[in-house]
Image: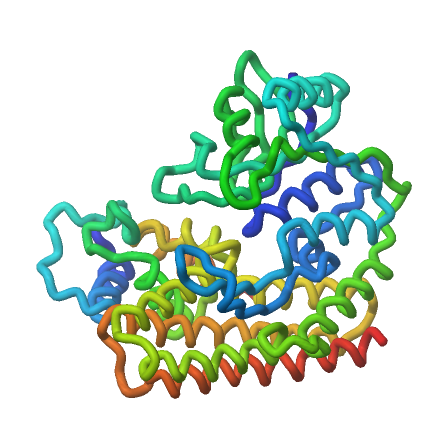
Length: 337
Length: 92
């Protein structure tokens, strides 16, 4: 049994699952939403430097909103109802999944990506918030639309069960979800406006100094002190951790800025608001600047830094990102208010 | 056979990533560039440098991480991306 589900690859799993599930639901109407539009309507863009939250004993930096927010905000913003389920029993979770498939429903699942055998070994890491859509079952294999892969994949039932019940931080506990009710057409304009306003508020009206665009400046100041505060080994670990979070986890800092830029271009066309196009250019510039920072940091870690890659230069680059994004999100608030 | 663009890319990568060891004979356009199977010993930190280099030198931007992984998988995928994007820019 296999649903007639259109699989589309995406850069970011939550956005990909959200847009693929919604596009499946609205197949008859012919309306579709892109990954970028989903990211923007879900207010996916963010920045937070959280030195008190440790990943592998090193501070957490995030370039996006909390996991799950995009799906919830986009579906509720578009008036789409969703049924969520969690399970204690693996057997019951898999039986519930089978029942939904038999009823012809595409089912989103949260999994621990490390346990999915179709992931190449080099790309496996313990991340318990990997989203995918189960679209069928043939024999003992599930057919899966995993948005980070170019084509549909198959996964043995026992492996999917283990992935759905991966242990550790943010354990998925068999979480699954499906769309239960949707309006006849997608009303994009209000969801876009709300998504922009919510993201802009989080970025430039955030009272917490280490969040939003102020947080980027906060990181710049902290980073400049690292060489005086820590030994070289620790400093390089801190820089390396930051680059991995920026350029590897999810789509990375630069990648998310480019995705938001693409969203603003789409939003400009839908809302008929040309000012969004110029803000889109600013976000692309910010993404490029984040990558310049990552290169400087990588050169320090690799022992090939030049005088242009000093900690002061890295701090200045981050402050440039902060300035560009502050201007951009203030402009966005003006546009949608 | 390593074509001109692939050769040019390899030379640039060797320079920017400061690779001082001799390039293994089995290095081809299809061998992995980054990760544990990389014959050049390149990792994800080097990948950032390569992504920015192709934007600076060839004017093509890698947008996302997943796309990036596929693009900088091998010298061939990297060269193909540059050719495709350059052609698209010319058409537009």
